[in-house]
Amino acid sequence: MKKFYKNKNFISILLSVVLSFAFVAVAAYAATTIGTNVNTGGTLTVTGAVAASSTLQVTGATTLYSTLNVTGLSTLGNATSSMLSVTGMTYLDGGLTMDTNKFTVADTSGDTSIGGTLSVTGATALSSTLGVTATTTLSSGLILNEAVACVNLYATSTATRGSLVFVTTGATSTYAGTVYWQYGACD
Image (cartoon, rainbow, N blue to C red):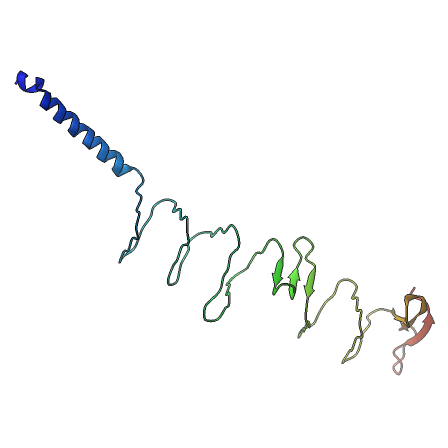
């Protein structure tokens, strides 16, 4: 038996077997690289991160169960309706722009610009000044809810302005108050 262990062939075979097992074990636990396409008829389950260095193509509906982080430009669209449908509150940070300049909301101020007609079907409450730079048409009455209200009128410049002053003092059941015409701006 001593002779058998001292045999050079035995030592060579033993070292070959040990190194082979070590190589297989390391290869089995290391990352696997697939150099060609993989097709599966069932579910592909991956534990851990997936890094794709090219386009990820998915045919059919896709369900994500956590946050989707996108770095860079994103295009969302439906081939049949070209519509993005969102259910629930949507948070946008960085401003909003639609069709280049047709509707924009500035990021930090919230200033809004509309490149077309604004149609409002319900009541509108404004908490600051309304500035109008063109002719204004009111299809119903103008209600001024002040004891003394004033409307500035300009002829051709701010230098030639007049004003209408509406006063409710002295109102009766026949007259709701007095209207004065005066030169100059509202006091």
